Image (cartoon, rainbow, N blue to C red; front, side, top):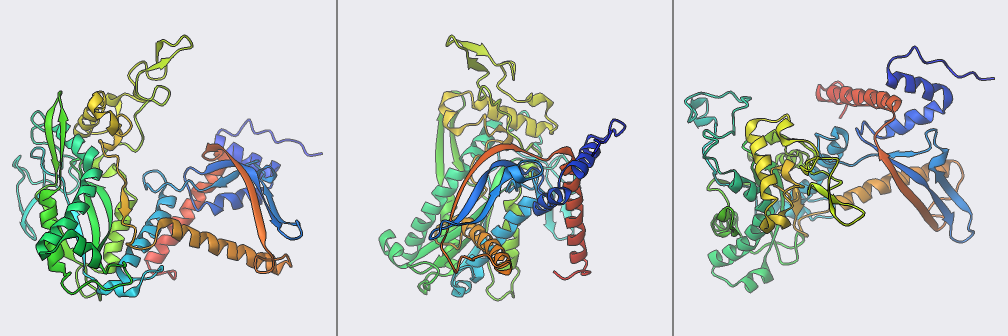
Length: 486
């Protein structure tokens, strides 16, 4: 008779749980589940089943129940794109983004390879100034000028990006700019087409009949807490990447049109509390040519790498937190409706509406003031649609970090479908080796039902995941050093 182990002397909860898993369950399957997650930091725990049957004979070809797992649940990756939350899943997201961007630059993934001959530019759009900040000024390579404060800041100086005079810095303007940055980008793309038609001396209708402007963009935070955008913009023929753009659609024309669109794209925000604000782009913007054959400074692979790196960042570049500050039970209001219909003070946040006090956040003063400003503006009814309580931790920005026009290239969903199809093909090959029917031999019908349980690991599973993360990092380091094939 198997006697349960006495683990009272084991102090570590993780080690105690690991020993229990090893002695009371199918430990090989526990290890396999964790390894299949490739180091995901917060896996999704599911309960349910899936059954695949032959549509002709009604015979069950394959079945799975989470109840048959040693822990009674199925673990799947969280899929979070943010490196601050899950480095493992963000690497997958970055790889998909790299292939999405690169396909739109050099072809592949159902995109014609002739796109590398189309006019293409890497465009950077920045926010305007809301007050002087500490920075590192350079006149020429290797020659630096002192900051406005008189000092020469190091690259890792925490003062970089913070206001020289916090009392006069326009915090309301900076938060509202972040909150409207996505709308400003949408307006920019509209004005870009209009400016291009004007520059070329043709009507908008004639331009749309002969030329399509395709793009992909990603947002990145500057140290001062404001987002700026990096975009790949490409000229195509009227039917997209499969057609050649007209000869008059040149890089020079694109460069001029970007400058005109930057100047004209504006939004006006009105508020009785803070007055009228004009949301516009900053004076500094860049339009760089993307080389076709890898002989320039900006190649297809370099640009794709830049965008993929930015796509997995959150607001950590600005030094803020990566979690919402809005109290979920009261949705930031500070009160809940009681059984009698009257407002009752929210017990979770003590009426502040905040999941944690802003003054207690481990951030620098400048970031804390931006968060506080976003929260205060969220109390104004004219800004209710901006949902600034929900996005205060993002310093007001609530847009998509990465987006693209429909005809730029493939989609992230299509890339995931390809990866899923590859895994199914591997499973089909395994079934063929065991003599089970494959999808080529019969029509299979799959039914399933899944319920979300929670997120995260058991303490013992977390130890196994830590080992997986160590192994993955070690393998990557060996590949970088050339000790293993890539």
